[in-house]
Length: 59
Image (cartoon, rainbow, N blue to C red; front, top):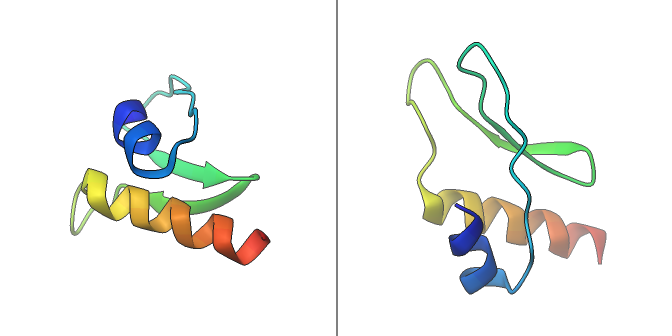
């Protein structure tokens, strides 16, 4: 995941260990992707696209 964000967007991401099966991706404190009970984990491509879109909204 970290590598996909570095390669796709040129940013350094950090992983924060959670518990209880929680998986969320946040940009500036706003959740942009998360694990769903219906669809499972988002793909790396979906996460990179969500982070990119969130960064563009902030710029």
